[in-house]
Image (cartoon, rainbow, N blue to C red):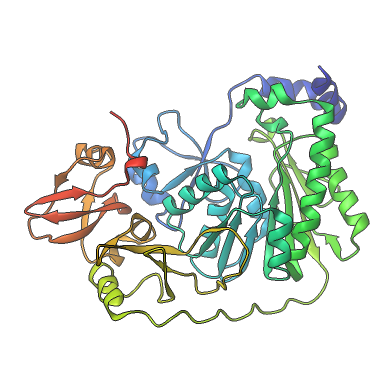
Length: 435
């Protein structure tokens, strides 16, 4: 097979070792969502031990018994993510308060990793060109409790032109031939060809040339793929740098994987992950401060009373906007831009239904238990937790009245409406588990 010949040429003496790992077990991983819990908190709730990966401080190899059906996964305590896929965001070097663009963001692993590093400060703009994948991205942003994100469904060239010079950091996790995913995705292996590799490289260069427009002077751009071919990795970067003298390669000062071209990193299966490539570039110039956000409209007193009746201290801020009867709390650093397809900006506080306001799942997922006026605590191993995620009514403290969060081992998983010692289930039907 031509792929094997290419890998042998790329790896030389290490090819036999590559084959040993490549024919072994897949690497499976999770990343603790530090927006909602700590590694210690997650470990204490699980019956299995977590072994760290070398790629990010919150990354662990996924035990076989832990799946996406676990209540803490539903609650957004962790994200199931191929271990080496966490490497690119580590190289991006995100700091709290920055404005960051994830240009090819679905399904959301890297975006939610960026969000955790922002710690609720600054702005995350996550974009996906394919509408169905953009909806999956939005679902994961919501599940992981991200308050300060914008999710859009735009062509990269259109988006970056509209947001020219706005971002401190830009991630381009480019669509690729997926050679690092062959072991877990048979379709990627079937679709592979040398011509597909070449066409991916052209598309990747085009996306990079769009992405550079959105970056501030002095900003950082990280380009990554989950493929091995030099054409889609080192060669794309070389062509980009040759065409744009405003960018310089920069060592990301990481130790995982192996260096290539003195500034980029490669990861092969023998390095502990399925496979990844990432390169960090910096745009010349001095950093400039972000433009101040336009103040939101003055909030209706009835909306604020509702907000205060369900949550303590207005935890999502007060930049309220009403769109199609949905009460949205916009991120502090977000300025709406006409002509862009934005699926959501910020958090949905509630929805106006027949002259009353009903709270929204989005707000509870973005809240910590202490942000909520009332809370029903559950253990992840309990029948009550399983029943709640299945959509059933469950028992609640008889003193509770009205809307209350549901927290699994201290991580908010949704909400319900309490009355007479019972909690009427409000977990969204599309997310419920099957028995």
